Length: 113
Image (cartoon, rainbow, N blue to C red; front, top):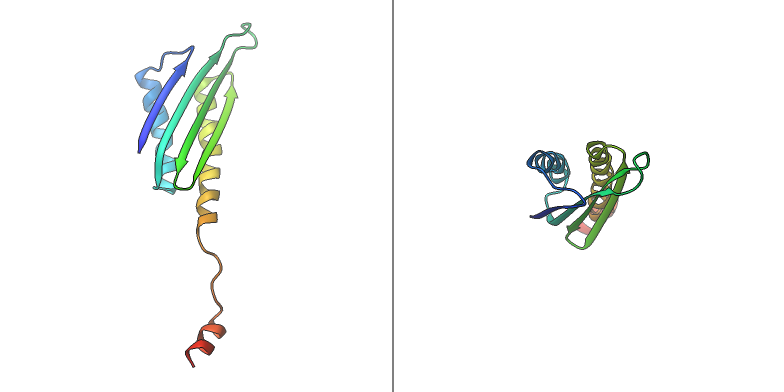
């Protein structure tokens, strides 16, 4: 898994990097076929009252790219909400990949005879 964590108008500190890595572990626990992860942390330069911190992630899995973004006044809260959204989307993607169309036992028995 390739992981890229970058910041825009923000220096990515080791503590911030470690926080993102611990949150990503939850996502990779659900789905281990992750090819590439790109995380972008941004501080929007606006007035002091309207300052927004934004986190976005692009997750490349086999056959699909999943993009999620979340903004909040606190960057750690934005990362938490982002990982919750990402986790839901990864679980939904994994559920779609699984084959839920099983043949009924009656048809299996009829084909054997």
